[in-house]
Image (cartoon, rainbow, N blue to C red; front, side, top):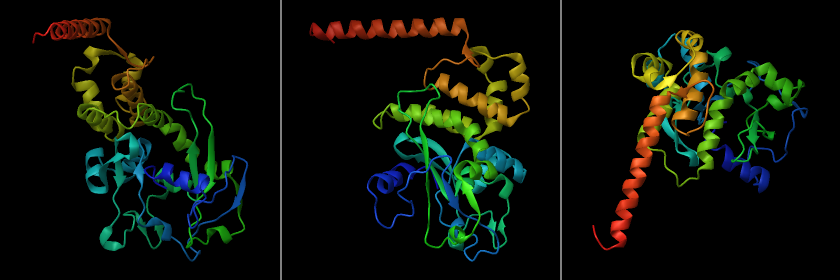
Length: 302
């Protein structure tokens, strides 16, 4: 299930109980059980791999482009389209379906998924959906998650005898690993959501968010070939690691976005004191200028 429609579908299915929804209006916990098995012998094999709205997470992109031996630029150009995500209006990459082949996923054939061990997290979760009830103002790591079944009419996997708990399914499919890798990215989406739909992210911030979330090569160049290290303090051991490791660079990027876009503190990346002082002076100067202008307007002068 793509991230874009998850909130409205949860609302309709779990709160309103809308008839005909593939989402079962039953809340599942981590130890809840269900029967399911998908394999080439099942009659509906790969039918769920068509006309899907799959928003790729940063870790999805890292795994997929490594599997295909592509740069981020080439992967994004060949297999994705940029999109603004739901009410957050945060830029993300959506996997392009093959419209001239009935909306088939580009990585699926009659024999199954050709990148199965590196498939996106939403494919790993299926037929489970994940929802979070985290309050927007809390960023302490505390959250209440729950799960639900996505039971589509064509799916025969539920008729199989194999039983799972939600947690055993997540572990078997490695979706728990993907959740850990993407958690700080999801945190950024929640931060943006807490600002409200009316708060538009500046274009420069959107460009930065998209680059850091989707393109490790460009982000690495940004860190090492621009004035980035003249502006921020980063531990030398971490710098050596992110020079070669895309996953470490991705996680570093989440921390950087937290600082650069949302103004939060980070132990991993900090503004240099001279840059911070200069920024404070600019803010004070701008506020004084605005105050003087308001005073002139109050006296009837331009």
